Image 1 (tube, rainbow, N blue to C red):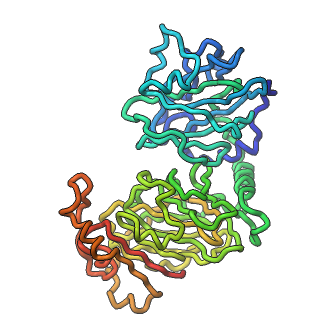
Image 2 (image 1 turned 135 degrees about the horizontal axis):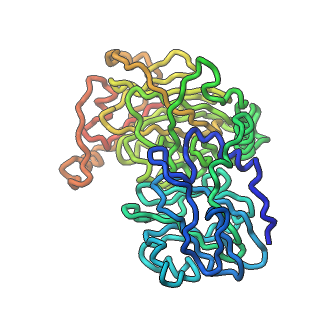
Length: 471
């Protein structure tokens, strides 16, 4: 049997700096009681620590346990593997169900989650990959409003685990403490209350270890002092904003989804998106915390009306210039930050007039794009080339701009611009009359600005505009 040691402090550091994001206690918008295990459970399960720990007392099966309440959409769930043995084969299975565990109050709980439960309607579960079934590991996951369950281990985002979950009904957690898994625990949020300086240092150490050290000629991350947001009187108080769970296939997100790291052996597919559309005059602030000098290029930036939850990583092109071939509205800049240095702070916001402003290290802001801000616009970044890791600091409101739209002639003095539109036959196929009423996008007003006119060709937001600009 395992030795039952607690989680190393270095792992807890990966989850610290929570910024008010609750763990096992609902969401920021709706706090809920601490998660525990339901009194209804499998025959071989005993509950400990007031119901926070479920332990299988014998055999290798009959180890089903449920959460004591439904979980919310977007609730951050963290479960520690407190005991793992080598006496059996098989690993922990976990998932969710729409069936109230009270249903089994008067009937026998099945022996297994798979296939006893998963063969029935309203159950979703499968085995945790065996390589992650290590004593002390922390499994974390959340469910999106579209019914996808994303998971990670020890603060590293792993991807989609389950799909098709019915979130219109209450959702309880299932764990099947099967095989070599012996005991699991809903992590106590107080475990994350570690000193700020220590937590940031340990988290950054974890991030830097994911980057190919031999390829970095600058420090992989900023110092803890530099990353303490609001540490000085001149630092703004940031509102929370995270990266969307959908990301490029070479991106890893930490458990809080505020740090994105591209695989050190790859230089493409580094896409990350804001988790929601960005409002006018809402400044989004990111910081470059890892670079790799083996590659050229830096950081691409853009906006889109495409909800990232409707995308798969395989939908995204290796070259962000090819996003113009994607459906819906995409506007972007290939090199907003050409080979940025570690600690570079980049800020972006959309004005009331549709100008996209860009600011580097609190320098003078400048207009880099013109967009249709009548659409819900997500921001996206592509960590390609030398940019290896970025941190989402958050957002700050800014004073509303009343500056008029720039004159069309200003384009002649700007950096070279490439505007790409689909071939005419494609555009004809996308005329509103050929779209079903359920998918037809609302046309938007033409702007006197030439960029918005071109992007609004045929008054259809599904056309695209892409700008190539070295900053």
